[in-house]
Image (cartoon, rainbow, N blue to C red; front, side, top):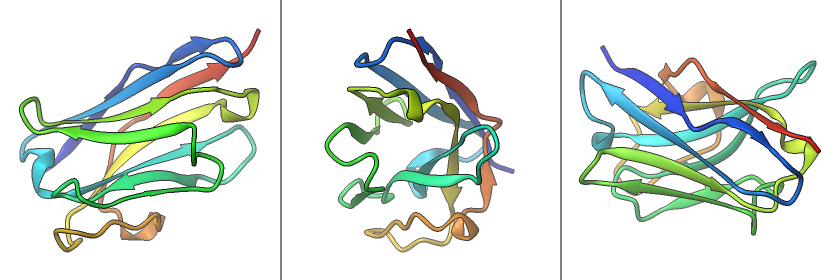
Length: 127
């Protein structure tokens, strides 16, 4: 059983930066494509970014392009989402998820493709 745990959320001012992290217990993250999703109050969950298991492919939602960067660290088996130039509309609970059936060099931002989810970490952008 793969259990994902997010951390690093918090309160940040508009224009600021924050890095959220995703680690796993059980099997390591290194074998799977990992996605970051978010859900704002009153809205549906949406895909933000994903990274393939080999780290060679990344995808971003239009809202994240140019501001967010996803990466994975093999040594610590951690996936990061670096968020810069944050806006109030980025306020949401951020979830990481694992797509255990993705081929090595692919990832997609389709929620239904993901099999395991973390509990989420709150990111609030406010002055």
